[in-house]
Image 1: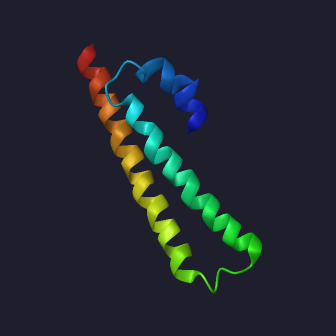
Image 2: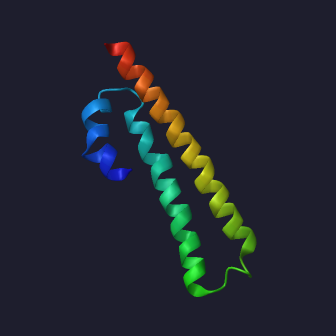
Length: 82
């Protein structure tokens, strides 16, 4: 996703839309939440931190949904510019 909106087709077709810059925060939040979960798995202490692991995935899911909302907004904005 990062490459798509930072240097790929996403940037090419949507960087002019008002919502484009809003992608960065939820994209980073998804990565951060998943990386925290992966670190828990590497350490092998996920059972002791089960609630944190669940919260990380909930956070990733919520921010992923937000990403799709923003992408839909960008599509609407791009189509309305035509």
